[in-house]
Image (cartoon, one colour):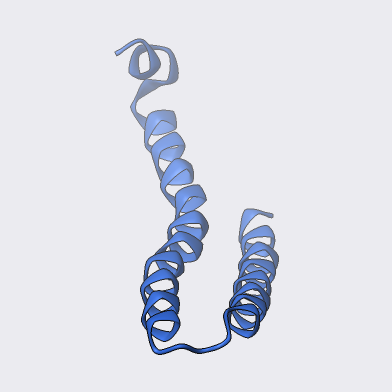
Length: 77
């Protein structure tokens, strides 16, 4: 309530839009975590190499995070 009073309706809309856009990269990166965890649990149950799975998962998640950060920085400016 105080924020809407201090910012006004126009600036409040911009504030809410920027908060929404700022949360999208985090949602994209965190949405990958659930499937990766269940996939690695499945392959662990099959007896696959845990070190190889961890290495591939880390490389994929790091690359994805790096790309999302680059794209997000361009959208932010």
